[in-house]
View (tube, helix red, strand yellow):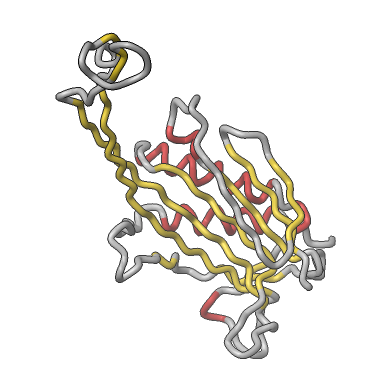
Length: 229
C-alpha cells in the first residue's frame, strides 16, 4: 500500500503533521476568535513517501488554471481569472526555489519529457446560513395555568422571534504534481499535492498577497521537493 504524508497549516491553528494511508479524511472548522478572513486560510500538502525525491528535477507547469464549476450544483460559482497568472508564477517560483528546471508546455515531446507535470485548478462555492433568535428571557417562568415542573411553572412559545442570514464565498486552489511517465490506463500517479482553502473577501491587493503567502507556505512545508545538487 502506498504511504502518503500530510502537513497542514492554518493561520488560526498550529501546524499539524499526520501519517496517512490511501484514504484521507480532512476536517476543519473556523475558530471563534477569527477577526479577519485571511485567518481562515488553510494550507495542506500531501506527498508520496516512496517517490524518488531528489532525482525529480524537471517539471512542466501547465499554463492554464483549470476552473472547476459543477454543472448540476448551485453552490459552486464562476471564478474570475484575475489571479490565474499570480498563482502560476508563484507556483513556478516555488519549484525554482528548490532547484527545478522547466520545460515549456509547447516544447514537450516524447523525446523531451519532464519528470512531472504540474496541474493547477481552483473552485469556489457560496455558503448561506439562515438563523433565528428567540427572545426566550421572560417567557420561561411562573405563568399560572401552563403545564410544567412544579405548581404554576411552565413554558410556552414566544409570539415572535428575529431572523437573520449569513453568506460567504470560500475558494480552493489545488496544485498537483503528476508523474509524467507513470500513466497507466488513464490513471496518472500524483507525486505531491497542495491544497489551499479560505474565505474570500479581501481587496484585490489583499487577495494577491494571500495567494503568494499561502503558496509560499505550502512550499516551505515541503522541503523534500529539493532537487539534489
